[in-house]
Length: 324
Image 1 (cartoon, rainbow, N blue to C red):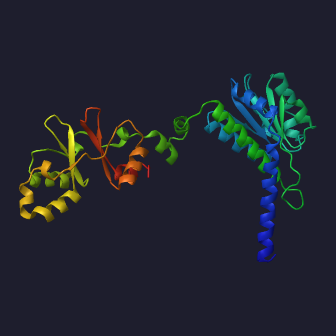
Image 2 (tube, helix red, strand yellow):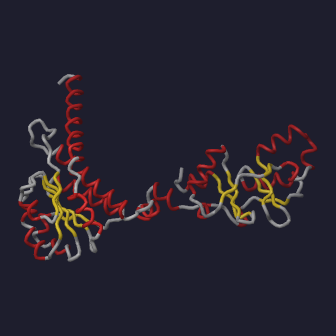
Image 3 (cartoon, rainbow, N blue to C red):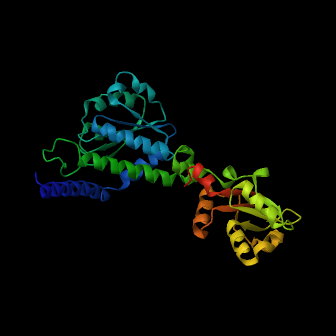
């Protein structure tokens, strides 16, 4: 094959698979609604099963459901008929995938599922198959042609099944009112989870680690506070501990240029930047990052409802936590 024939074949394969998914759109009907309602009303777990390539797709579907608020696990049908069907209990719903609808390992499970009074949802390419007939509801995921030129390797059919599985999982997500916070609880170790869970108060510097000087302090002492805390600024508070400004590295450079040697005899209140950017400790840390990006700053002061200084958060704190 030359370069152009490779490119054309790849385009043809993608077109076939795209058409297989597009064909599913007109099949979303009352059967799909019934399947969603059955899954949403499941008092146990969703048991997904499939053999071979359908099994691989089933594993992905069960993982997607489990991570989006629908308790689910994958059952290998070959192992199921040798004892693992014992993992299925009353109240569960089984979602079975088989393109032919006649997969031996799955068909052998049907009598056991019937005795357990398990509601069965099938995704099959053959609506007249044994699996479809035994199902409480059957979803048609048939394809006109496989992308494999020999029609042997499951390609378009597995793509269609995966897309239908995603449609079920995401529709269920919305029906359950699943939120970003819920998603984060199931993904605490991932970057996305950290962005949706961690709040400013979880990462901010507090207590003696907060750079702060009184408004009447001389700049030569304020500089020592800035240097010792290594945050590029110090907060400035009034007698009641309320934030009235910040003195930054930039304020130091501009002050030295303007006042020269007299700069060191000025008070912090003479040099400070008034009305600095502040944030609440209860907001998500990612909001602090957005504020830093918007205003091109690296430190934000955290205050309470009375403007009392509670802490500071630095860009480095967000970097260490994996928010960035």
